[in-house]
Image (cartoon, rainbow, N blue to C red; front, side, top):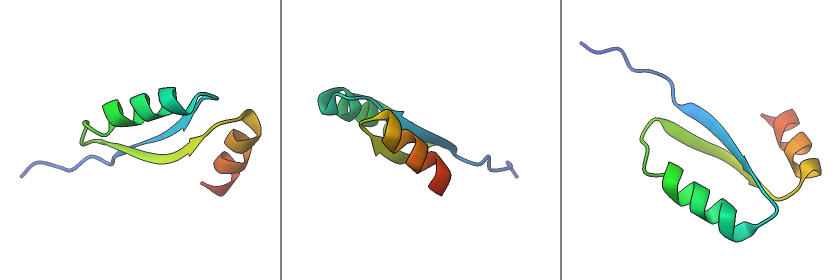
Amino acid sequence: MAKEHPKIKVLIADQQPLFRQGVRSTLNQIADIDICVEVGSSNEVISAINTL
């Protein structure tokens, strides 16, 4: 029986919503990746990391 690996947690951060959407769309195709947070600024990154 194969051992299940935990998913890779990803935080997407970029000022451009269209770029974030493209990254999210690409990563959503990979079963082992879990997009936890998507943010648009450095302040949002810090807040998001503190809540994870």
